[in-house]
Length: 83
Image 1 (spheres, helix red, strand yellow):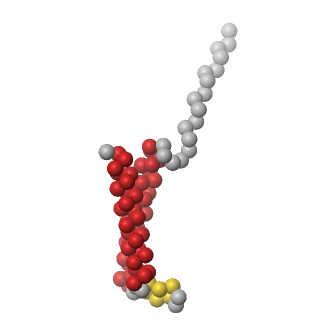
Image 2 (cartoon, rainbow, N blue to C red):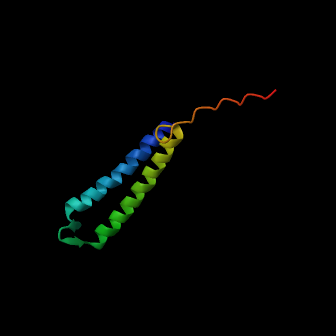
Image 3 (cartoon, rainbow, N blue to C red):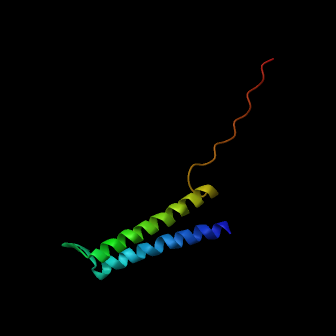
């Protein structure tokens, strides 16, 4: 069940980015010369926030599973006892 959550979070994090790309392609926001509609700006902000939430959750899931991040430190040998 847990790997499915990771896959679902990745998919739900990437889909809003496709929506942001569509906003730029459709001309609701243009960079040269800069112009934007209020709908385009707010929809972009909403979609980027959704994407960030899902991708952050996917990052945490992958880190908890050990797929990314620091490698586990090797176990230290116990110190020899003094006699």
